[in-house]
Image 1 (cartoon, each protein chain N blue to C red):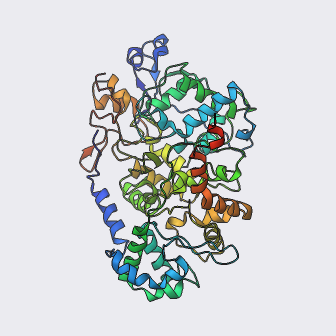
Image 2 (cartoon, rainbow over the protein chains, first blue to last red):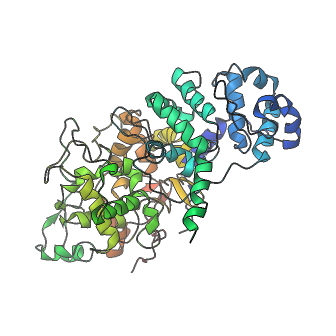
Image 3 (cartoon, chains in turn orange, cyan):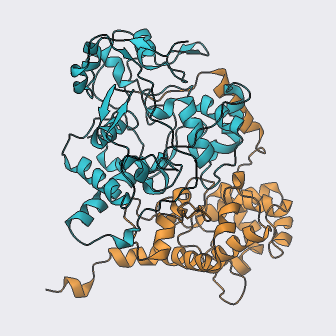
Length: 231
Length: 318
């Protein structure tokens, strides 16, 4: 069966409604973005990899994030939907075109790591892996598995659900805290806020560390162990 | 409108899943829409065991295999599954979550009479029904490893649950009739605001690589016209208690009804029972005397008026 297209007027209305709800998208230019990104490198680094600062504010990796995601975050910071005392002055320096440009620049810089997508059962003894793969469905928690929205191995889904695996732990934990205290409230459909509120502090620390180290953990798991392989 | 219709047993016997109906009397009043009795009200008290307590033996291994199939039913794609669904899409927390049709509440209810195929169904047959309809597939044969694995997973999950007793939390909680009749146009607005971010503007779902992340809700990849979820009431019940993911009970009853009507008034693979009957009209009259859009004309198109079984290779006359 070929893909069925909505031919109904309803479907058309729905499409129009979505388009009208979004600002006119500007074409980003990575080369121009490099110029505009001069103000970004002090924290996000020249290679866009950011930095984890265990005793201070961590600077997220931007390289390889979807351009549309970066763009939305910058607009949200300017509009106060994502409050950040650190980022606000820098975001305010950028006009809409520059935002599109720096977003394209970082998106194209280095691809986000591609991680395994195949189903793997979660280890019930590993609390972090369990939360990532299976969630915490206790009656007072009702927390879906992180990967249910952020994709297999937490590598992100589309432009809306950002990659978690390979992001800095300090940044991930800070964002969950920001949803809890209300300073970040730019999640589509308020999908994240309730979940962040129902996570406890131990779960936040645990899951931030899990995703920050996941690419390395998976690489180690896949690499042939010289000891085991020795005859 | 009467839900009752008179059917000769020979018709039922032509359905792949109901050979036992041969034993039924000719001309008995049949209602293919009778649901199981509702789950009782009351607090959910049953808790399934944790996987960390699974034994390391052959039984435990079969439970794990069943759990894997439940979470990743796509591993049976092209063999028993011909759409893009996984069991855990509609039975959250790997079939463990109360009010999300949990498996521990189903296990002890079977064998049970189901109007859907007019016979007493064993648990194995009930699971086979999920493959035929919700997975738009082919039922794994009785005694085959996938079916045994799933039965064993359900059996383990039901450790300590009473037998032949309907437990609180079974199925999806039944919504009251909406104040206003479910409305597709209002539902489209709810869908755009609440559902499209995950399930896509055209209900197509989303994947990462080959892995399904958000299931399709209509079209080839979705449940077919015979699946319980194509009924507006079933979908509304599920949605109210379980969607959007992580936000249970956040929609009003009216929103749940409306968005269920919107989703289920789209095309999907043909009802497998259409193969057993001559016409769409007959299929509609026999099996669709319930709250659904099968056979209805929507925006100039009659839903279900096709010989399109999605990826399922068995043709209309097969």
